[in-house]
Length: 170
Image 1 (cartoon, rainbow, N blue to C red):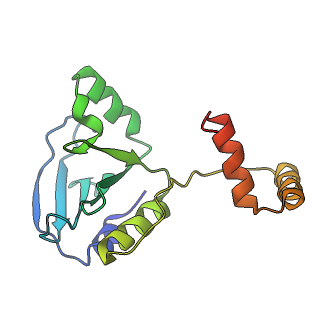
Image 2 (cartoon, rainbow, N blue to C red):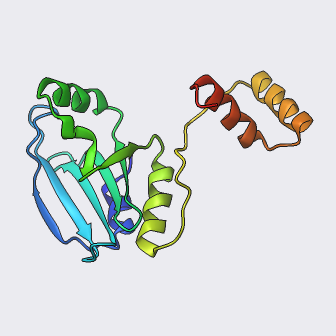
């Protein structure tokens, strides 16, 4: 999970506001707090981190790209179920809403969040796809490499195509 230091480096140590986090979905005894960094422009960006002020555990990081109406969220996998169950118990239809009609896109990889956040902060184009960790044994990897070679595509393109088929997106 993203560390406090990594978050602070992404926002260049520029915090614009903070407050206690009011959802009671994290471990008993934790003191969740939210810090935000906003560039002050309505078509700009903001980044948020929710962390435990006692143990410094990061629960959630968010990157909001107002210019392109996109919002990305990375929830600490150790607390994701707690967050989702709390939202369900409290009938919170807004649990996935970043603002207005923009929902969060949940990310799986720290680096994916960092790369998107850095590009958003710099006002640069970025890959809007979600990186998904794939763990393959050597035989499967070699087999996929051969299949990709036969089709004259990259291994990443081959894996992406397989995932799209399996998810019913193609």
